[in-house]
Amino acid sequence: MPGNGSAFLATKGSGFAGTETREELDFAARFQLQASPAVMARGMLGILEYDATTVLKEINVPALVLAGDRDSVCKPEASERMKRDILDAQLTHLAPAKHMGLIEHHTRFARIVRTFASLC
Image (cartoon, rainbow, N blue to C red; front, side):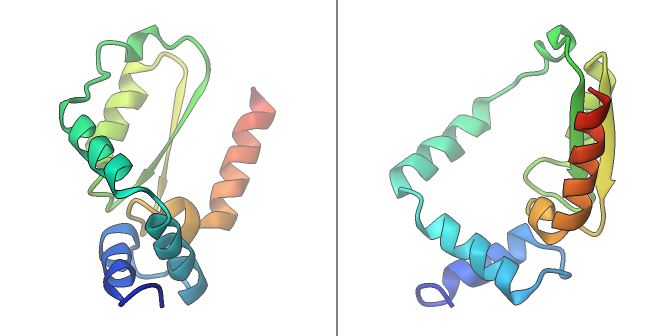
């Protein structure tokens, strides 16, 4: 378990939906501990004011939008908005999944990306 366990518990609660393995959870928690606190803080503050809705309609390449059905960081409604506003977007949901759905469902995630890339 990384550190004193708080990173482990925070990552489990905010990132995963409950089907993760111990190894997946350990990987994600350790990865976050390597990030600079200053960089993390600037990123969190920046995301509060970030709004890309005006540029979505300008994206003119195929886009794959993957949404975790329980993601509290990038809410499913935001993924729906991207699908609606990006001309050639494909939306796929991972379930059950929070923000670390790509790790929790890594096999399915890889298959989805591989299929999407082959069609591009």
